[in-house]
Image (cartoon, rainbow, N blue to C red; front, top):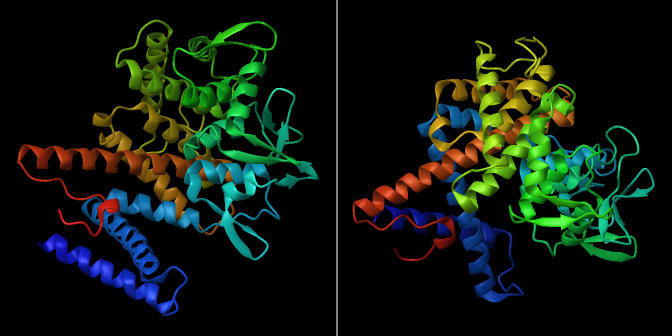
Length: 394
């Protein structure tokens, strides 16, 4: 009964908001108003639910504050590079918005709409498919092969998602095919593994343009054998890619074997390494995995702790996310993002750290939702409606 009253009140508030900005005879009629009110009610209830979760756990409240403050930093298509904008997409996915002139638009709309930078197209059509513009100079386009393709996995776009490339239209599937053809052992494989493990079956095999047979298992094997000392950002991106591939494999098989099992042992080793070098304030070593260390520079802490946390949240199982050392790490990154919210921070550290918090919040909320549904089922109750069910009678 209480829940029905709450839904009714929220729906009335939403309807009031719509009517306050809509003519009495809208183009879509009263049905259009109803749909718009329902959409606003869904957003209000979802926000209220996050607020309730945060109230129950002060850490989640701190995480929400850090995510929201970072969201208020506005990147501009007129000023910032694709490399910078894509990092915002990593953290906020399809919801990330940028300025273009005086308007605020979805970053994905800009990315897919024929964007240019330095007089060069962001997306290129090729004889074999398509690709994002490769490296030209630091922090302009891709810094590594398939970096932007990997970042887009956080938005979970379909293969037929379209991009404007000059006077042509290409798809995400064209880019995936291009990445498969171009892969070689001579390149940095991190982002190729990350992107292809999102879109391909774990058992996928293919032949590159040089006639070499490749597979995700081979990519995992190569990435988890190398030392992390020379790879970007202390190896955290490499760890993230291998972990992402492992997780995708586990979704299908539930059990690891062969190169996948060896990769998991490699992941577990570095989890313990990160924990053993954690500082007393919750931050991780500013030397990544090359020894303990602490820095008083908040931007440097966001760089190292943010990258490390981002990978750890992907790597740890559900039952470990609330371990004290993990919560201290989450709190440390959230605190640094909040404390530096009015200071200039490079996009890489800023958005990788934020992405780590987004991953943590999403996983914790998903765990709570599953527990709530399980409890309701055991007690013979009907689980609460999801936001998409607003307005329906339980």
